[in-house]
Length: 82
Image (cartoon, rainbow, N blue to C red; front, top):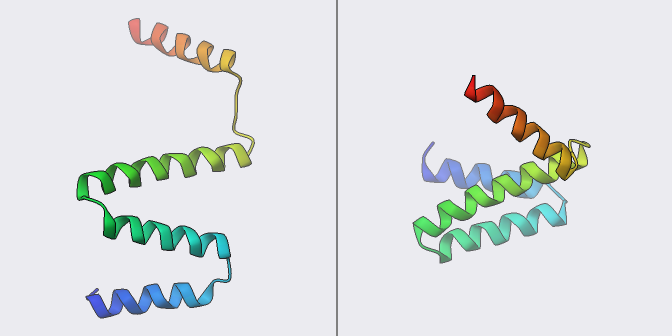
């Protein structure tokens, strides 16, 4: 894809949505990419992706208590020792 095609594709996606929260996220994300150094951008992209995954897991009920998490970690490390 060349630059013109990418711009056209992005514009089409923006025009087709009425989700104000999504549009604001896209606007802020784009602005942050333009305003920050590359290393900071890469870190923030990764952090944002991990946060989004976590939020989706919460929405889907994929949660566990602190005690359950500790037990899973203990089990995992015990299995690695074998």
